[in-house]
Length: 159
Image (cartoon, rainbow, N blue to C red):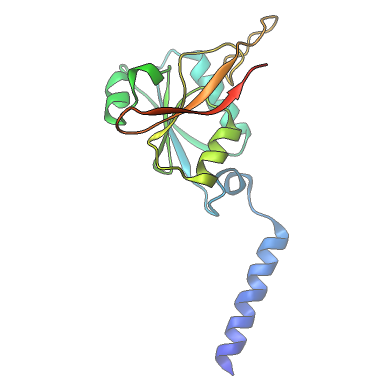
């Protein structure tokens, strides 16, 4: 009987937590726990700083590591040269390269494909952190990449 009461208490506690909602960072990662995204960037890159602010505004907790040379970080995390951008982020075992929209980060974490990560190659105008007033956004793709360098379009933005 005591065992049944403990189960009932656990179920009620779970229902109460669900009814109260989860913090934004937990909702953003979909993992039920706050996860920290580590972003490696140059100390002088303003668009990287803008992208960090963008993901923080969407509920992510971010630790920024400013490095004088980002190339070794990209090599360590197997980011193909063709996929590289100005900053590299690590979140829940995945690489997020460049100005990736939050919707794609959330999709990556929800679907958990067998890839190293996702990237927005280059620095296309209009991607998150690369907005310029009075300048039309450029079309861009978010691309998956694996350890062998195989790439595939994950999503497309053709404003």
